[in-house]
Structure formats: C-alpha cells, structure tokens
Image (tube, rainbow, N blue to C red):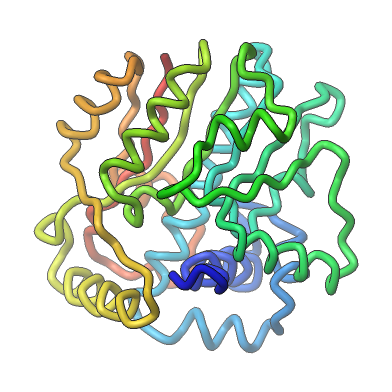
Length: 279
C-alpha cells in the first residue's frame, strides 16, 4: 500500500457491503449508508458483484463477519462496555448506524492516514456529518503505537473496550499482530472480534486459484497478504496474550447460518474464520 494512497482492499470491502444492499436487500447486514458513502451507482455494483462466479462468497463473508461483530458488541454494551475501537475501519458505517446512542457509546475508528483522509472526503461529498460519538484516529499499524494514538484521541485506557479488527490481520506481519494483541490485552476486560485466513490448502480448488490471483493482484498494487494461521495456532496466540474465552467460527458455519441470504451463493469451501475472544 502506498503511504499516500487509500487502501484498495477497503474499497473492495465497501463495494461488497453496498452490493449486498442491492442484490441481497441487506438481509445479513442492513446498511442504509453503504451506497451513499461509496458514491457508486447500483448498476456499477451489480457489475462488480458479477465479475467472478465466486464473488458471492466474498460478499457473504464480508457482511457476515460484520454482523457477528455487531451482534457481539450489542451483548458487550449490555454488560456495560462503553468504548468500541474499529481497527482498519475503511468506509465502515457502524458509527452512522449506531443503535446504542442512549448508552453514550464512544466509537474510535483507527486506520491508515491515507485511508482516513479518503473516508473524510467521501463523507463530505456525500454530505454525511461525522457523529459526535465518533473519533477518527490515524494509525500506521506497522509503525505507530496504537495506545498512544488512541489515548490522544480521548480513549480511556482504564475502562473496558470492545475491538473489531475485520479484514486486517491477513495483511499485517506477525510482529504487528502481536503488538496489537499486546495492546488489547492491556485493557482490562477487553474483547475482540477479528477474522483470519488459513493456508491455501484449506480452500476448495476453485477458491484456491481465485485466492492466488487475488494475492498476485494485491502485490501489483503494493498491498500484501502475509499472515496465515491454523486454528490451533490462533488459539495459542490468543491465550498467550491473556484471552481465555475463544469462539472460532469457520466458514462452513457462516455459510450454514447466513448463506441462504446471499443471492446465488456459489459452492465451495473457504479457509476463513471469524474469532470472538474475551479476556
């Protein structure tokens, strides 16, 4: 990723969320801001969604992981958590849809400076105001101290927090992943929802070929997919950072739970997981 260029993967994820509203009527994740913040027409999104016969799997996973995270957050808010940190937010719209206004939830979106600049531009062009509950925190995950940046934005280090970390882990080095988990675990009673990918062997043949092409495409634009994990390895990593309650949801369960909501969902097995971990 170029230091001065917004993330291409953030754009792809935003298109998948918006396409879900058009093709699947938002049946997994209802997001009335998805098209508006993206600024693309419905026909363009349909064309994007139909560029590959397996694209429906990406649309399913993108929306399902967000739904899983937001459902888990709702339960955390019921338990008294009042801070949420969205790591690698891209064009995420949760703060615009925030259903926890009466609970005075504080939302911190953390992302690369260039991607956040792009988001501010998209919000301004769509005439969407930044809500008072939201703080945009520019951070380079590979270089910056997340704790320092969040504290400067008003985050309360001594209060529990809920972290969402979607579509980010595969693009970070193991060192950056470890540092981020170190920080999360330093926040007492914190919890996190994130996703990860297994090695290519965990994908069905057609998806394995598609993932290889996607990886090559990312490399051409300066983005990389560098970190893959096995479920046992993720569990061990989380436990080493103090997370003792770990729910690892594999793709088959996601497809079984949400797949009927996606129009023309392609068959196949993707080696992708969503994890909800608590201290």
